[in-house]
Image (cartoon, rainbow, N blue to C red; front, top):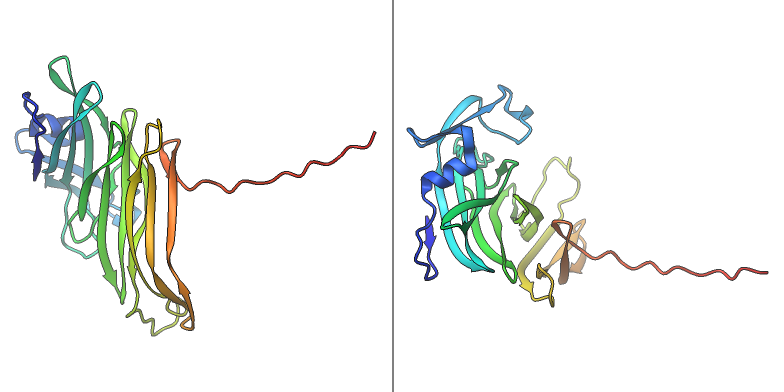
Length: 259
């Protein structure tokens, strides 16, 4: 568990305050566990739940970081509940919250309403706190996984928007399909590629949110023959709660109207 202070004298929100705020009625303070209900057919679960029937799981506090943001400090928290290591594809249930120190106490400001399942084999992968604006932070989730010779690092960026914390961007940072092989051919010729990518947030004048830039370097072979470069720089802007690529401008031709 990561706990970071930045010179503040007030205490951090307790685990009890965090768990009650994020999990509500699912959380039992006596047992310090949460109970989730999933349909008997796990494939029919709207959130991809891997459990059958009711499942009780212990909640784990992954990180708790307090940072000066604007007029008062905020604490960013990340929790894990519902882990199941019974299968390779099972992703744990993650909770995210932002507490703000007001009136001499910590108050919940934002949390994820929708369930976030990310990772594999019951492990959540990496969760990093990233600065996405002058006084704003988000959670960058990354998970490296592979199957059948296809390996990739999936990334998911969560950002506060009002009282909620929601998906702001998702994509693949790395690919390594050199050993990919499909003996049946049902998925078509193997798309071999090797790509390494990095991301950064760039100052954008007086905007509340920084620019988000993904820089890729690598190569690929389409249909096993044609070599092509995979060097690419993509710059996203924050629009309506998400990081999106700017749309290309469309030139309009003006027609002269005859009298």
